[in-house]
Length: 184
Image (cartoon, rainbow, N blue to C red; front, side, top):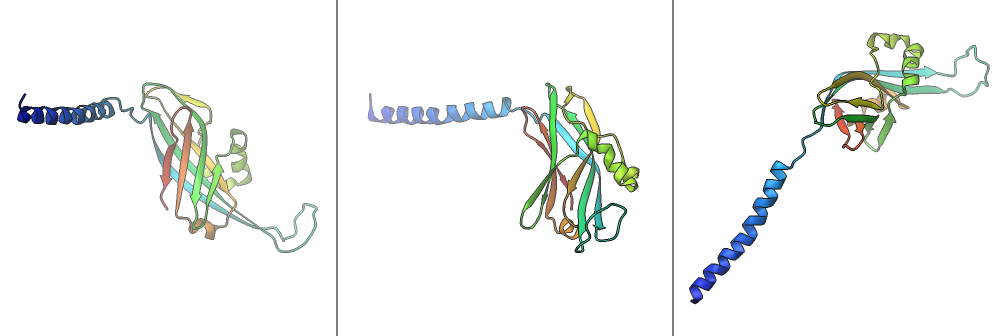
C-alpha cells in the first residue's frame, strides 16, 4: 500500500470515528426527548397584607405589656394546570418562595382543612374565594384542573414590597416541579 492511501484511510477512519457518535447522540437527543408533561398558568393573584396592633385592650384575658404588632401577608393565587403527557400526573404538594434581598422565604400552601378558615377569619377575602387546588390529585392525560392556593408569610407589607420575585411550585410525583412566576 502506498503512503498516500494509508494517510487517506487514516483520515477516513478518524472522520467516521467522530461523525458517527455525534450523529448518534444528536439523533438520540432529538428523537428520545421527553416533552414537558404539564402546562400551567396563574389566572389571578391577590395579595392581602395584615397588620394588627395587639397592644390594644381586647376581650381576651391576657397580660398587658409592650406594644406588639402582628404582620402577615396572604397570597391567594388561582392556578390552572393541565396534563399534556401520555401518562397520569400526581400532584403531591404546593409551595411558594418569596425572594427577598437577603434571603428566600418559603411557605407551603394552606391545608384543605384550613382553606375555609382563612375566609372565616378574613371575611373581606370572600370576594376572591374559589375552590381549592387539592393535594394528592391525579390528572389523567389531557385533563386540567383549576383551583386556588393560599400562602401565608410572616412579614410586613414593606418587606413584601422589597421582594425581588415570587415563584409558586407545584410538586408532582416522578416529575420536576412546575414553577410559575408571579410578576412583581
